[in-house]
Length: 93
Image (cartoon, rainbow, N blue to C red; front, side):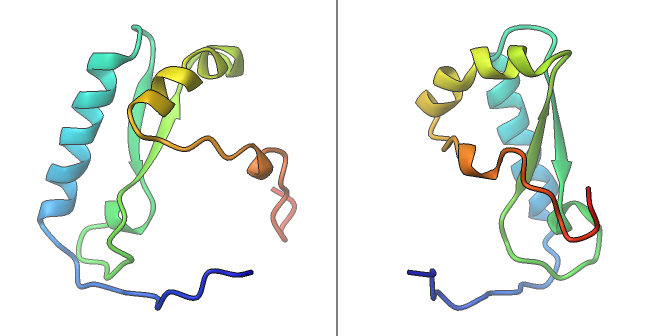
């Protein structure tokens, strides 16, 4: 069954970059060296109204590096959603 919670769009918050920075610091402190954490999605765009969810992208030298830290990320409260792997968008990317 599809999730039916209402879609909330909030006015831009100056707190979103601070929330990202705090979570980025928490992740980088827990991860081995060589990882990057970027703020992506609509909350990363100054002055843009958005769903108030901070989206992060984890970068590493290889996919296997990411796969090795999945248990660590799950221990930090993140969900691993393998069903989204290999999904191609409507524009083919």
